[in-house]
Length: 178
Image (cartoon, rainbow, N blue to C red; front, side, top):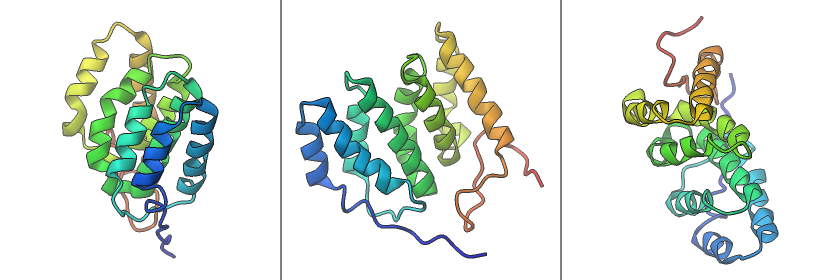
């Protein structure tokens, strides 16, 4: 089996790009810049060249007032999780709780669910169990429903791997399925 080559995109979306994005006032301009990143991050395994600034920028934009911007950020988080795989784990822990909050909103819960499905492959249960317990205690039924969906998806997709070089499975999967 041929290994998927890593692509180098993170340098292109560095500090300067992040600062320019945060300075934009119009949501349509933010959307355009975020779509560039969506396109670049969708092509597979991403070389880890340091994504702290990019991650923090995307995390800030999760609270943007425009739902289109928020949904694009959720899509980017999912793609970065897939592309960076295990290297995304530390950021995945930081973004997990804010992501759970996006499951409450009907306008963002579809993309948030897809993002959560991707994120679960970068996390360990012990890293997020307290967040999950807290979310299950939330009065919003949307969070509970979407966590159940994520669990079901992780069992269904337990054989899925993001590259031939890794066999990382979801946090909810306990046994290897052959």
